Length: 393
Ligand SMILES: *Cc1c(COP(=O)(O)O)cnc(C)c1O
View (cartoon, rainbow, N blue to C red):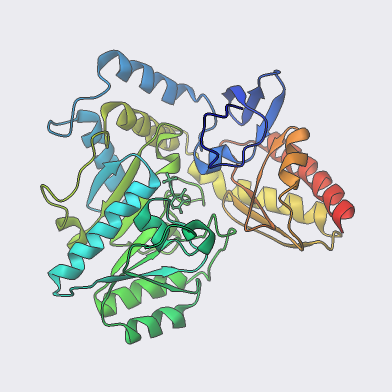
């Protein structure tokens, strides 16, 4: 590994040369089943032909002009996103953190419009919203913030999945203008809230005239079994942020807004050189069209249940496995003790997984994973978990 790269990631000593579907091949041509999808990015799997074709064709015509001009693929992508989300308009950027920055700026404008000089956003403990200064200030993880003070002001952290905490914070602070929350906490450890949590937040936001802002950067684009996770709750937020799987690996982020929130970012208030460029938008359009054309999201819930049932069946006698849960293909397996080392064991056995929050195995396989691959994943990983827990018990 090059020593000229800043050591911001603890990297495994492995790199991949090519991929196809759920499979990746390393430089020694060893094959791995990818149960992480580059952290919920390659939802259609690797080297998807539709994405490949869209990028090739667009790159023959145009890569970039500028947001000073109209961009046909950006307009087409916006239309498609709005149709699928029931939101109203969209600002395009290049990453998740940037999408959340746009959301944060919208809520500040919203507060000032209401005459609140020091607008505050309610955010959750154990949340993750990105690594820029504002988004790491919003993030509910002291490790992410350590060393970066002074943090950006205007965030109040409360426990996740605790509607009473939301209610009392709103009553306590008169300057709250928005609530920013993940429908399921991904980085925080695959925390799935009570089924009506988002509905109750929606009600409180309506009651108190606050913006409901959902960070769907990890949960969006079919991951949980609906195009967007809030569609399980039959609600619509005021702001919704996307990135990760939107381009299946081509960097693109989006901040969707509706109603009052859709009218605030006017000319001169925000911008991005690359945001919504022809290449990224063509790739994202191909992603959304492919999801629709092959009804891929329709099968996500069944696949998630199949995986969970597979693990529950095989691991039921392992007392070191304390919980197995999922929403669609967002899967968490809690062990009774820290298990970061299991990532390496899995890799040595041809399986790519991830551990978050120290003791939660997180699986985010491509949505196109098939039954045979599911069988392989659950069989192989269960053996590895059993081996790991006997070794470290
Ligand atoms: C990954 C992620 C982000 C940050 O996205 P980047 O593209 O890395 O900036 C923000 N929020 C959530 C929920 C995420 O999972």
